[in-house]
Image 1: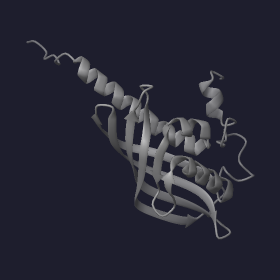
Image 2 (image 1 turned 60 degrees about the horizontal axis):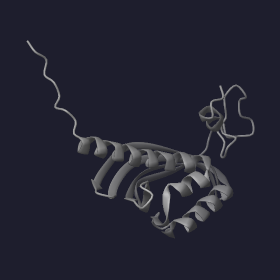
Image 3 (image 1 turned 90 degrees about the vertical axis):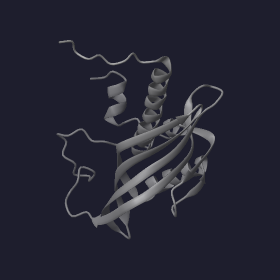
Image 4 (image 1 turned 45 degrees about the horizontal axis):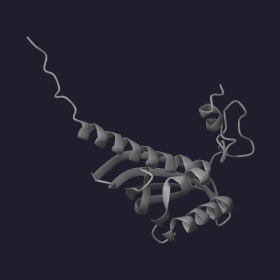
Length: 185
């Protein structure tokens, strides 16, 4: 008996897989940049003339969206965590469209109370590979599938009394992940 073998991968198929992997990496890095509030990284993932549509929260040029993100983060939102699920990408030459399912958790103050927001959403992204050959987002639309806000009822790692036995996630380059990727143990 002879085991079946898969057909050879063509150069075109390989190129499509690589492009889809690069696009998926950009979507993943968007979440990392938002959660760590790493604006240089986030800015690098979008074309300078990109647009962002977060529905009733914000819609317009990406640079203004970044300003909105910072103001919201420095205002009422103390931490965020975005988790990606299904990522579907369709390629058409140097353009692509994707739909990414995600859940997000935001720890924030609402009307003077600590709350946890849980969101089910989808990112609809249009990508373009322009002169430099690098894929970047040219337009993003956020679709809100569900949203639930609950008062925080228990101490959390984000409180001032965080347990020192645990590595604490923070926004910016002081987060343990930056040292980790730089090769520090």
